[in-house]
Length: 230
Image (cartoon, rainbow, N blue to C red; front, side, top):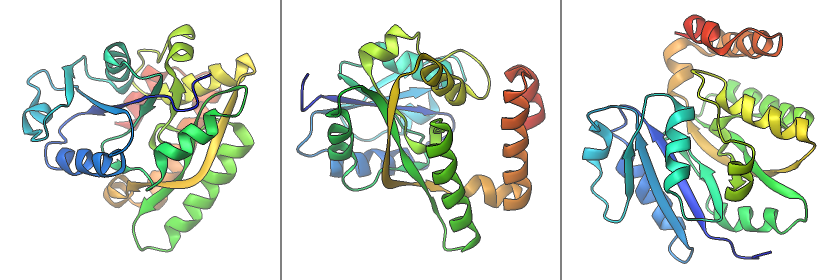
């Protein structure tokens, strides 16, 4: 096993022109000594976010809107041995790539994710962070905003993300758990934007997310859940 695997960072975007260069700059500041490639996949047919990228050397593509299809598109273009799926409003911890490599040194690990941090000073969000850390360790099902990473050959072997409008991350991790394969939960926190909670309200946003998760586990289709989410 390669102890120093190359990593492809795949960022699905939609209307992220304002912040995409900051995300790329943050990645490159961490990856200066690492073999890391960055792939940005735009769900806008006009490629509005891609057109805003000012950094050279970024692999870009346009795909059908939807995180699942966009991330699969990026995975096809990736050359790294590890795939790291990163939301455009999420920043990795300073030692993220070293953590990934250390995690993957453990025999049997097929991938993993980070603990969740929320970029706000509001103390109520610390409760959300602790809940997510507890839930992830109990269920072994991290969500997409926790920066999921997987071995590329394994990702291809299990068929990648399903092309569904919502819960594509939960579906992927449930399939991994059902196979009995092991993931690593890195205790370092990613830092994700609080904009979703600030827009919808933390109480409504949290309760809505819990309900969506419960309904999905009860067998409600992602298509029906997506209509409710919107």
